[in-house]
Length: 105
Image (tube, rainbow, N blue to C red; front, top):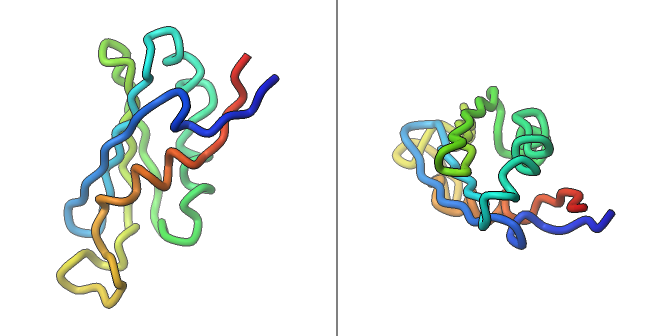
C-alpha cells in the first residue's frame, strides 16, 4: 500500500485564536474523504504536533464538505501577543499537517 503525504490527497487552511490553532483539512476528491476520516485522527495530529501542541486536539467531521477540522489547544505558546516564539501564529500549521503521511490503497 503506497504511503503518501497528505498534500497529495488534501489541501488545508489554518488560523488561530488566542492559544488555539484551527486547521481545516479538505479532501481533493470526495472519494478520498473516508481515508482522511480513518487515518487522520485527533491522536495522530496530536503526535504530529507533539513539540508544539501542549493541550488536547479536537477533531470535527464535516462530511458534506469532505473535510475535517482540528482544534489544537495550547499550541501557540500563549498566543501571538504574549509569546516570544518567532512565529506564534497558526497560519503555517496547515502546511505542517500536509507533511503527515497516510496509506492510500
